[in-house]
Each structure stands twice: as structure tokens, then as C-alpha cells.
Length: 468
Image (tube, rainbow, N blue to C red; front, side, top):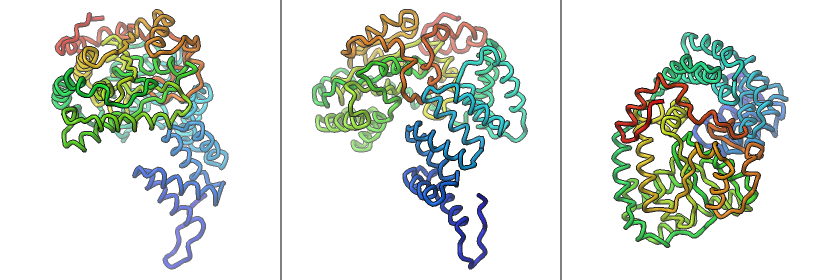
């Protein structure tokens, strides 16, 4: 439908009304007012079910709200209404990937790129959606041709470099993949504040020490059915959550930001930044915030005896978690330092991981993660450690030990996690749909000639590793 422009003083037509409403919905949407935008989109499709713009908007809202099945219905209505646009197929592909409908997702990515061969983000997301063992080089060469297009934005060039890197990686050509990963990371616009991270880490040891946690012990909210999976990104947290969520008594809620939000609210209330507010925590505060967190998760999964929150960076907040929720189970996912840092460097994180675009920053954060987890193990235990190498080498023994730590009986479905029907929105959404494979263990060996600076950086920050 083509919007008409009303002449001054003329009575607006239905087309201009629809155009104005759509413009307002888009403005609300971009400003983060999704509920307001959704109401306008709903009014649009009620008035004109043949307008694909309203359906597409509802699909985007549903996808952002974590409702991929609803989003798929809306995007399909948009296409049926004549909205044969690359964006529609691209968004459909993302939602179907989240739900494990990988063959369908591939068809939509292919159609999106047919409709718009210059769709840089679609190349990137397609690269993350499957393995390209036999045809990776063909796709990589196509992307390398696209990256030479004049006038591309930095964001689009990042998409293309990370896509080409993934295609060459899958084609077992690490020497051709590595320059693309370097180029993509160099285009990240925000620099990581290493000094601020270090200062905050140092203060954490004293803010949440044994005496503080002893003072707060027993005052939080008692819910033994909450599980936190923490660790560095790309260390196996998604795999662990998927295995747990395959158990008949467990629901996984993905990467929740609730604990970080609680830390920010406590900082606001006490007038002290994280983690300095710890000295001002009272029994009433930890009980109230612990109960509010548990209530939020129980509302999201009301029938689940056990609920998993797998935000990796909660490793910074283990002391707070223990104060708020004394009976929560905490699982530490740990992977080889070189494999972890390399895997982070190969991932185009959209937000929240500013350290991942520089090898020295990665080494610093990895080292802090290990120091903090050793501290938490000594003052905020018990903490169950799952080593990625052990998980892939002996999955049943590792899964049984994990289930036992959480207080679950054994469920063989934990080993058939790749068949579990649930939405996964993390960067590992393709991997958790595959049977357990060992090729990711020792990943750094393939890039040995490029990782000398990472080995040196880890050593400078106190993490001893052998050069691959």
C-alpha cells in the first residue's frame, strides 16, 4: 500500500491515517515503548489485515519479548499480505532458529539474501545458524565481494567480516578466517574501560568477604528451586542450561538481567556503587529483593519445580546471589582459557561484552573471572564446577553429577538435550540443537600461529596456559 500525501487543508485519507499511525508506531518502537507500539500495530491490522506493516511490527515486538512462536505467525501474515521483503524472511529465520527449526530457517535466510544480496546482517546471522563444512568457502567468497562495496557503514562491515570469518572457519581455513575476525573486532565503536573493571573487581573481594556474607547469612529468601549458571561467555553455559532444561522438572529461562538490575537498584538505594553497597545491606533488603526475584521467575515458569537463570556475567554477583537466595544452586561453567577467549573473539556480540573485541581485554576479564570464582568458592559455596572438556568427554557422568548437585533424580533426556523443544536466544542457539560433539574442545589448536599475543596476555594477567 502506497501512502498518499495529503494537501494542506485536505481531509486525511485512510492511507495517510495508516501512514501516520505506522510512523508513530515505529517512533515508539525505536524509543523502547514496545507496548505503545504494539497497540498501534494491533489497531492497524484490525482496520486493514492486508497491510503487512502492522503484522511485521507485531512480529518484531513478539520476537523482542521472547515469544518467537507468536512472532513467526505475525511475520507469516506479513508475507501473506504481500510483504515479500528480505526483512520479513530474515526475521522469520531468526525466530525459527531460536526454536530449532533449522532447515526452515536456512530457506528463509537464503530467500532474504536472494531478495537483497547486500543484506549484511542476514549474511552474519545465516553464518551463525548452521555449519558450512562443504560450502563455507563459496559463501565466504561471496561475502568478501560484498565487503568491498563502497559506502558501507561500520556496523555492516562488522557483520560481513564476522560472517566471512565463520564461513572460512567452517571451511577449515583458519588462516583466511583470522584476518576477518581481526577486522571485525577492530570496527567495534566502544572501548573497554579496563581500569574501571579492575577497580571494581578489587573492591569485590573486600565488599563481599566472608564476614559480610556471614552477617547476611540466613536473611534472604529461601527457594531451593533456583539455579544460576555462571562463567565466561562461550564457556558452555548454554549447553549446561539446555541439558538441565531437558529434565522433566526443570525450566530454563535463558539470560536474565534481573540480578544486574537488583545490583543497580541497591546501589541507587544505598548511594554506593557496586559492590560497595554490600556494607549497607540489611536483612530486610536481602529478603525483600530475594523474594521479588523469586516471584518474578516463578511467574515466568509457574509450574516448574526448578528454574535456571544462565546469565554468564552473574559471576560478578555470586556474593549478592548468595545473600539474596541462600539456598540457590550455583553452577560454574569453565572452559579452557584459550578456547574461551578465542570463541569470544570470534563472536560479534551486540552489547554487554565490550571486552571481547580485544585479545588483551579478553585475557584481563578471563583472569578476573577465575579470581572471582575462586573467591566465591571459598566464601559463598557450595559451587558446582562443570569443566567443558569433561562434559564432552564423559557427558553422562558429568550430567549425573550436575543433576545430583541440584537435587534432581536422573533423567536420560538430559543427554538428548538437542531434541528438547524450547526457544534458545543466545549465540549458541545452533550448537545446542546438535548432539554433543568434541570439535569445540581444543579449538585454539587450529589458530595456534595467531594466538601468541593471547597466550602472553593471559600469562601477564596470571593465567598460565601452554601455547597450542
